[in-house]
Image 1 (cartoon, rainbow, N blue to C red):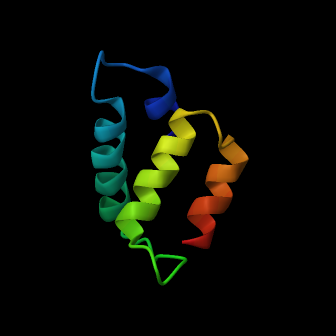
Image 2: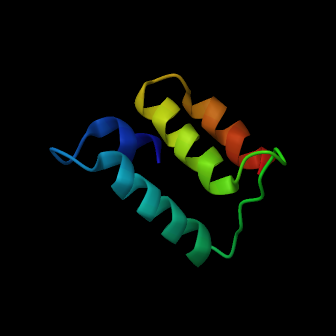
Amino acid sequence: MESMVGNHGFADGNKRTTLILLNLLIERSGYRLIRSRSDVSIQQEVEDMILNAARKQLSFDDLVKWFGER
C-alpha cells in the first residue's frame, strides 16, 4: 500500500488504484476492516489514510498500526 501510493506508477489515478488494490487484497486475504469511529464510515477512513500516506504524513509503522486497529 505504501509503495503503490508513494511511487506514482501512473501519470494519474495512483490513489484510486491503491484503493482498489487494497480492497482486493483485504478481501482475498479473508480480512475485513472495521471502522474505528462511529461517526465516519470505514471507506472514508481508508480514503483519508491513503491521502495521508500519499502526502507522506504516515510512516510504514503508522500504517501497520492503522491496519492493526481496524
